[in-house]
Image (cartoon, rainbow, N blue to C red):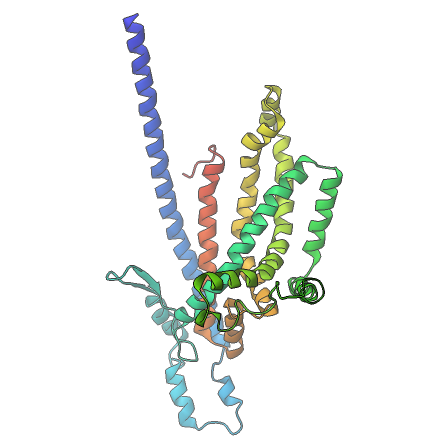
Length: 367
């Protein structure tokens, strides 16, 4: 009897030891995988920056507005501007000078790493200009991602479970309708509807249809009032961008849910007597979310593109207007800086998606 108890104790200790080893091994795998992905992402970002810089530098002429003046500035003026914009240097040399100053380290500050995207044609820091505008755009994109993800998970799962029933037909029809709508038209439609609601139904301005906040509110209002004002200004752009994004995500989630429900392990769990809602929640939902996570990571770049149009409709002074001004002025450093910010977010969200795979499905190994 004593020997049997000793064997059980030794076996339990061995299991705990092996469990600890598996946990440590899994943690090491995550670290190695993350480092590998970060290195490959840096290579991708460098390639993207080279391609964009090359095409913009070869095709853009920041002196075009000055050449269009009548009368034109003197020749000495153009010579000074050419040196100021480094147009007298070869393209590859300009790119190398830009790349080697791109990442800067500050060991005496809390923000150790900073980015230097160069100077715009207005002689302002592209990094500082983008930082202020990115703060505004991120509100809309994060809000749209949260709204679209919630709608995709709820409506997609219910539609997949009720495949072929009236609710599924209704959701399918609405998603196809939203997929067919142009972004600018849908945003303008919501804006016009909000104006009519404010004037004819609510009789006060509840929905804000222009700007990211009330002009000058930060100079006289408290922080809580400013936050509430920004949230109210955020409703329409977020709904506009989030609904159009959710339309595609709902279709992916519905198809993934249908595939999972037909899997053998789902039938086995049901045959064991587990309640159907429990089977869906504990076994089906996690596996059905994997394709949605992939699509969400890929669509981050598309969200930046949709945000450009949405910002134009709702008169936001954010990333969209900055890119439009940079393209109009043929500003190489501003355009490349904007593209790099968008590319960094795409790479970051793809890395997060890869890490989530292992959390959603333990069968997936990051190694």
